[in-house]
Structure formats: structure tokens, C-alpha cells
Length: 150
Image 1 (cartoon, rainbow, N blue to C red):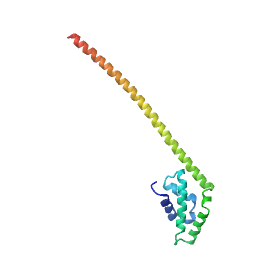
Image 2: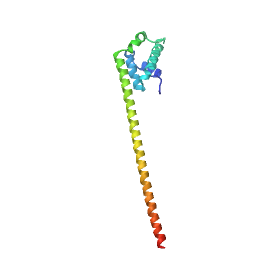
Image 3: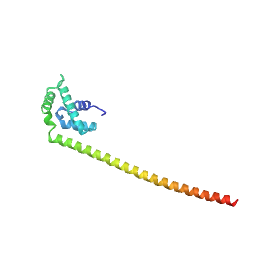
Image 4: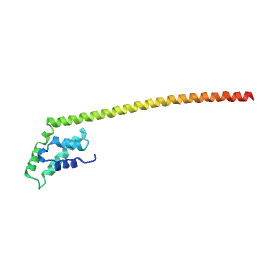
């Protein structure tokens, strides 16, 4: 990953109005900044929680921001189970499967092309050998004619 989850989350928290903060909006922000995978969700969940706690521990935050962070932390696990977040994660899984399928198709196409290229190469080698042997036979005939005519 080019950027850590924490730095992207920090960017989100610094540049988004606190009233818009939600698990879903953070996930969408994360996806817009970095490719995320289903396997990343556990680490991402931990990173979001850590950043919420970090922001809440700051001494200079407004009372309303502190209240918003308190609500987000109190409902943290429940927030990941909402239908919208589940749909986001399911869509992420589907896109990942589609990407995997495209990679498989490309690999199969490459393998098929390679097999066909090898078949062509073998056919060409056979034709080359046949032409070379015909050429050698023609040279031998010509050589024999020259020898017998002398």
C-alpha cells in the first residue's frame, strides 16, 4: 500500500466536516484513495477505531466533535453491521471477484496464444527442414550431374 490506512483516515478526519463522519463515508473515502480488498477490512476497522480514539484524546477538540467521536466509538461494532456498510463490503467483494476473473481470463488467453505460437513454431520448423532437405537433394542432383558430365 502506498499510504497507510491511518494517514488516509487522518486526511479524511482533517478535511471532512465532523457532522458527515460515518463508517460508510470513511470506507468510501478510503476506496477513493487506495485500492482496498476484503482481506483489508479487519485491519481497516482497527485503524479507524485507533484514529477515532486518537482524535478523541486530543485536548483541543470542540465539545461537539468529541460528542460525535463518542457516539461513533460507542456504536462502532454496530456501525459495521448496518445494511449500507454490509452492501459496501459485499460490492467490494464482488469487484474483487470480477477482477480475479478478468486476470484468469487474461492468463488463459495468454496461455492459449502461447500454445498456438508453439504449434506454429513447430510447423514452421518442419517446413524449414523439409525445404532444406529438398534444397540439399536438389544440390546433390545438380552436383551429380556436374560430376557425370565431366
